Length: 140
View 1 (cartoon, rainbow, N blue to C red):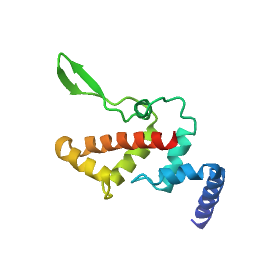
View 2 (tube, helix red, strand yellow):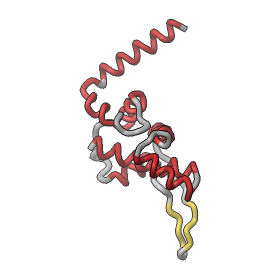
View 3 (cartoon, rainbow, N blue to C red):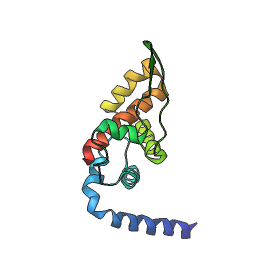
C-alpha cells in the first residue's frame, strides 16, 4: 500500500510540474465553488488551452454536454435529451455543481430556487450548465 501511495505522489508531482505554466488559470478555476485542485486540473487537462473551437459559452456548454435539450412541437414543450459529449467533462462539472449546491454562494441560491420548481437532478444539471459557462469565461 505504501508503494502505491508513493507512486501516486510521484505521478502527482510530475503532473503538477507539467502544469506549472498554467498555475494562474488553475488558481482561477479553483475560485469556482465546487472545484478543488483535483477538479480544476482534470478539467484543464480535458479542455486544454485552445478555446477558439468554441466561440460562445453556449457552444462550449453544448460540447460539454450540459446544454438543456429542446423538444417543442406545435407549442407543446416536451423533455429534451442531453446530447452525447465528453463524459469526463460532464462528470467533473456535475460533481462540482453537486458540491456547489452545498456551499454558501450565489450558485447555492440559484440551486435552491430551481430545486423547488424542477427537482434535484434538473437543478444540479442547470448548475452544471452555469459552471461550464463560468469556466469558459475564465479560460477565454
